[in-house]
Length: 280
Ligand SMILES: C[S@@+](CC[C@H](N)C(=O)[O-])C[C@H]1O[C@@H](n2cnc3c(N)ncnc32)[C@H](O)[C@@H]1O
Image 1 (cartoon, helix red, strand yellow):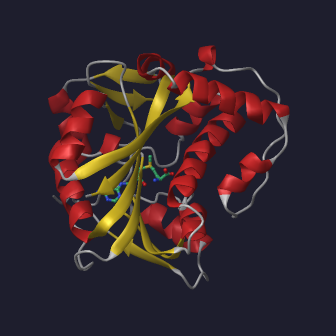
Image 2 (image 1 turned 180 degrees about the vertical axis):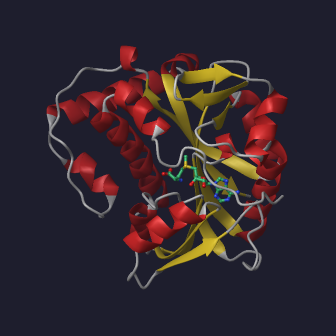
């Protein structure tokens, strides 16, 4: 599916950063880094993968992680403005390539050529048909055993559709959501909060096994209050951030792990979920 002149409606007034401010920004970052570190642990110490893709790269913030696990990265986005920003940031990197892509198609990539796909917080902003087609494309381009890191947001139970406005999030109908994804409007970001049972069934139907699942971005009322130094890691492998021997970091991880030990509790207490998928 192709949208005319797509742009990401959150572009320059930072609805997401407003949300992050309600959380603790450092904790927000470290919890995601914990997920990335778990990916590395699953991949093991062996040689780097050949090719990774960052589908919906945005400003390219996760490209350094992908470079830490693979030799080459192809990053793509539908929003030309964001893609240009990412290109500027990785301008002279010989192993990062950019593609402007609208919709779900990943051609000209041939079948079974990709080792790893990062799909971070994109699915919750696209139409349902586009999402299904995208999963089909992932399956086509991935090698056997290739993986997808799928990060998204979920509801505690039934699926919900929202639109973020400057005044906050408003619940909308599914039809309104689909309409907004196809016709983006400034400062009205459509957000789908997945019902995880249906999502997992769908992923399996599309030919993926779920290797693991980690709930993260714990809601403030369920998280430890810690005072941490601002983590510093300009442009490097973000998983190194967890190596800082600070007590607060350990508290954050311990809390994340204990919440994840109980699935129902985790769904209620976390905003986001990470699924590591494997093509069978
Ligand atoms: C919430 S941002 C996430 C950016 C990045 N993955 C991250 O985690 O920082 C969603 C991004 O998905 C992009 N996007 C939406 N639909 C897309 C599509 N069909 N193909 C590629 N990118 C898409 C948007 O332009 C936006 O940059």
